[in-house]
Amino acid sequence: MNRTRPSVDAMFASAVRWFGGRVVAVVLSGALDDGAVGAALVEQAGGLVVVQDPKEAAQPSMPLAALAAAPSALVLPGAGLGQAVGGMLGESGLVSWPHTPAWKAAEMSMEESSDLQFLSTGETRLTRMACPDCGGALAEAVLSHITYYRCHVGHQFGPESLEAAQTEAVEAKLWAAVAALEETAVLARHLATHADVGQDLARQRNETAKWATDLAEGVRGQMRKTPDAG
Image 1 (cartoon, rainbow, N blue to C red):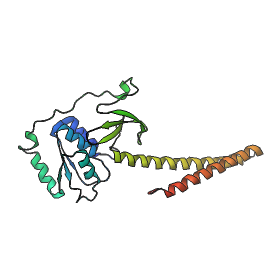
Image 2: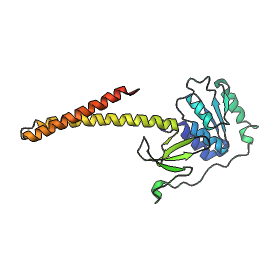
Image 3: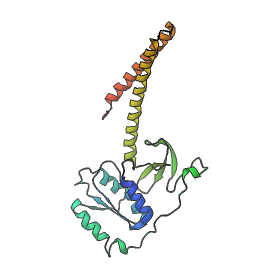
């Protein structure tokens, strides 16, 4: 994903775009699956992927996800990564390889297109899901060993990262709903006390305040039951 900047996936994808098969990607300990999509793109371009041994990683999620997405990756203990990468960059290593040309295909941006189902290079199809960051439609991109998602402004997510981002977005929207309901309730009670308000309108506003209060409390109660709710 590229929600956390600088993002490993965004860095690897950019490197592949400009240097093709001359890229060595190293994925270390970390949570979720950032780096997995980038590792798959590097492997697809003919570059090298090196992954810290998940068994010794403090957070094995990123190394495991990278291995699943780029099965040809070299697995090494952390202490051996520097020497291994240095060797790959020597005269007998990556420098001497036959290289895949860097990908420099011109991409048309969405604002230049009249196609309502616009897809960028590498995207497979549009989905009905919205980007958790900006609300734009997400397109699905399918590689050999991983499927990922990105919107037309560039937010990009691996499967685990999208799940985590969507959970965060849902929680934020629910708390925003609680805030709006509580504001509705206090405004309705305030307006019900105005001297020029008739009994019927005052009663209606108090009923609105009760409805909003009860609904806000119901949502609050559910949020307290949600794991990791703020």
